[in-house]
Image 1 (cartoon, one colour):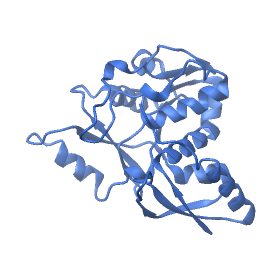
Image 2 (cartoon, rainbow, N blue to C red; image 1 turned 60 degrees about the horizontal axis):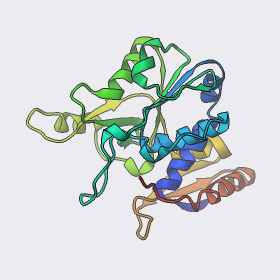
Image 3 (cartoon, rainbow, N blue to C red; image 1 turned 180 degrees about the vertical axis):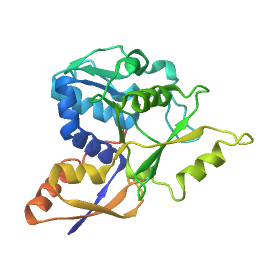
Length: 249
């Protein structure tokens, strides 16, 4: 067993590399429709997938989000600067399309990739902050997921872990007397750094600590274990992410 520190940016890149190799993702890229909903982690996912398909030129993840969390003193870009989502049909990228354009046409075997803001690690559930009065992209996604059995894949970093009952937390922040964003708990395939390491190397990762300074704020400590070959693959994989720069916009 060995231990390693992953910064949030390295974690996003790791998750993206894992999703690219996900068997269902590979199958959908060949014969179905994949919708990557705009978000910071999903920007890394889109980069990896579009690069694999030969479409990376013309995509910029720096504005690939509708809403982000920044320090209180910082000014976030407005939602109007988002270029839309990434819609891929049978391996072909359709620039300019959004989830709202295609949600009604999705079917079983198709995938919606939607990021999250809260992670219940033990329950393998996620929560999504909602600022739009009509729920925006997550409501469009859930109509396809619940109505037509579309697969919901949720890339989310361990930095977003929460403590407590996700439903109870949502009840509090969604109360009529509360203010700020609402929180919608969702059920789908949660995919963190832990799932990425297992898929890409065969090794098992456990979160053992977190935090840091000097660029490691939000970082996680992982204990990684497996047989010699699995651990070597995991070491090489994680070492390749060591220089991933922090996200900027």
